[in-house]
Amino acid sequence: MNKFRYWFSRMMYGRYGQDALGRFLFAICLILCVVSWFTNYFVYIAALLLLGVIYFRMFSKNLAARRRENERFLKCTAGIRRLFSRNSSGNYDRKNYKIFKCPQCKQKLRLPRNRGKIEIRCRRCGNQFIRRT
Image (spheres, rainbow, N blue to C red):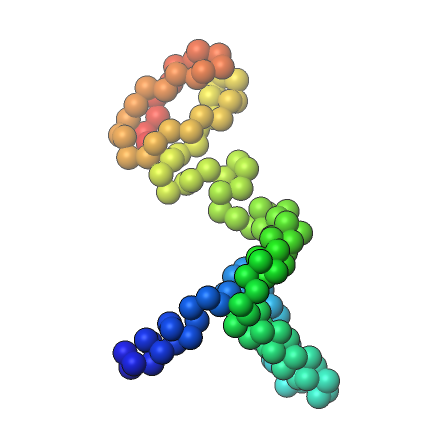
């Protein structure tokens, strides 16, 4: 097994490999394969052609062109990815922080988790209140 890993790592040296566009195309390819079970033969041919494009991009040595393709893909899908990302606006790192609203002015306050009961002072109105983090 180690010989295969060594051979594969040597073969992939200087090649582009996998990126976000490649993963997206692979997901589309899998969907087309499943759809081809229930539809005609042309969907299966489209899935195979898409798989060929994926392998072409993965084994390509033209790094600059593949990088430009991936950057264009990321730029076009930035809005959609932002909607589904965990740290989109208003959705702070909830693992490490807890969000409170000031009872007086409704200002959102972000505080670190696991600090016990603490006294919070609103930066906007100066109101003080106690909450458990």
